[in-house]
Length: 314
Image (cartoon, rainbow, N blue to C red):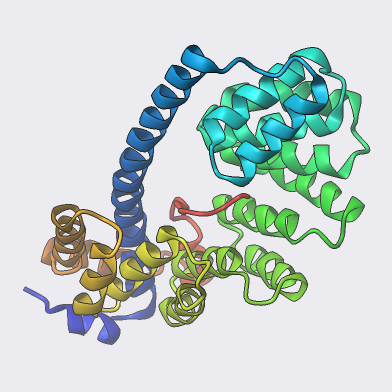
């Protein structure tokens, strides 16, 4: 059985393909675990919010007070309440672009992507020249898996609001989803020029490098993200995956355990170790490494791997 340390001695294309395959699988596992925790917390928050509203609270009748409550809920991260408040306000003023955008953002935070899409389709039809509307519509498209449609929408939004780093970062996510990694990285770098050191953008950049097979640059970007106090669990878990792909299982395990239950973290690392030490899988990778024509290249083959990122759209 091949030892993990032989990874760096393997041929270029096989190594990149293996990295991409394992990365996609492990990110899916980590995302599943963190999503389950988030879903449980969201469910508890939703139930608590509903019970609280039913017992002694009713939505403010005044639009200004309702907007203030929505903004406060958004700032405190109570997205269930925020969605309820913005939704109530949206029912009163569906044609207001700011309300539509904020309602869609809250819906995205609680996973109601289809509903957010419905809201933004209408807003986009009414306010197609609004940078905020175009930006949110593009983010919803990317979140719903329609990256090919999201890219031109986000590019239009960036042209309307060239100083908004979130639009550039979202465009990078959409490009990564389509396998256009070099273009995605340029978007992230442009976003970092507007907001240097932003850990969310650095995390997205690191994942883009990893999916491309450039694990050294991926580690560099993710370490920079994790060093920032604003870094989220996503940054740490993604760095853990990259470190595991490079064979640094001790540090990967420590990082994984910092946010995930110990059993889940160890299962993820064990799964990664097993994937990278399967002789049958190495044999398959080596077969893929043999070019079928003189024009075949490593980058061409890597680009065919399905992208799978744990990214942030903001």
